[in-house]
Amino acid sequence: MQRRSETTSPGATGTAPSSPAPRRERREGGRDRSSRRKICQFCHEHMREIDYKDVNRFMKRFISDRGKIEPRRKTGTCAKHQRGLSTAIKQARFMAMLPYTAEHMRGM
Image (cartoon, rainbow, N blue to C red):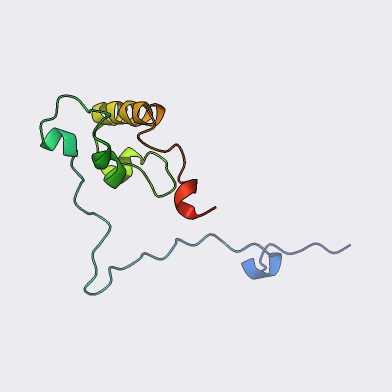
């Protein structure tokens, strides 16, 4: 049985040394990933309560096309208003002002 010598190249043993990943350069005319932070619409409008009867406001921005409640990172609402918003959407669903799913829109 032969032993490999320790002076063999890294490619010969089957394991290459880890090289650092190449850095991504910014494209010409493109923007880098840092974008403006979204502001909470409810804080901006100084709303005290989120009313479940105001269905048009919820349908536009805070519910996805599949009928799900949009997350904070997507809508930009603060934590306090996101909690109130999810409660209001659930109340509106219970009162049959909003659908639980968007199946009726997709055409089954």
